[in-house]
Image (tube, rainbow, N blue to C red):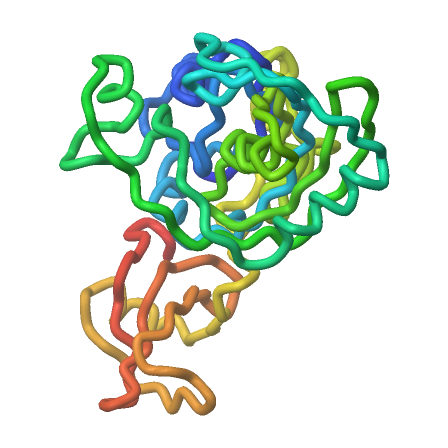
Length: 293
């Protein structure tokens, strides 16, 4: 069975689930998942995991993402993007490029954000967007997000484009909503492109057409996005112990209790994911790949 990661260039108009469906057709396999959902309006980088690699999605270092977003001032929608129903229109004050650049700096760093009601956040087991579509009354709590960098790419009339590098869980359309309020008007997002997700960039992303023509060409190793997880190489015998569910002794100097480790054989093969038990100085298996030896 094929296993690895494919950096897919998602087109506008398709959901992330649609991409997974297409990948199942292309690779003729069912066990496929993705990291970081993109709305149908958005395009760009979508890391897709194949086979046993799906077990590693949570350990990928794609939590920091970079987007290019287009926005409009003076109009607000229920979904906070151009696909929604218009719920408000307000005059737009005179905003120069310098004014807009200065305003964006207000959103840099760790800030509080209330996510869009039309988001995939679960409320008592139900997605918020489903509740919103059914006109249910609910409140989403604000939460901390981190905007590492935010820059104005273009500004003309009431329309602009910005680049934002942010943490996992950031809603760019909600950021634009708040930008409009900060400027004394309202705003909505009109387009979004994810240009980077961790190690995956849009320059290296493959289209569905390219994948259809040559599927194997674009499959990256299963550990391609795990650079932030400490690597430990063990003799084959100890790897076998872990595969059998047994802990193995390990000094673990400078390691913290419960630290996630990626385990490799001396030949360089990924055996699985383990945790360090500092109290007993052992490595305990967590997610091992039975066919890795």
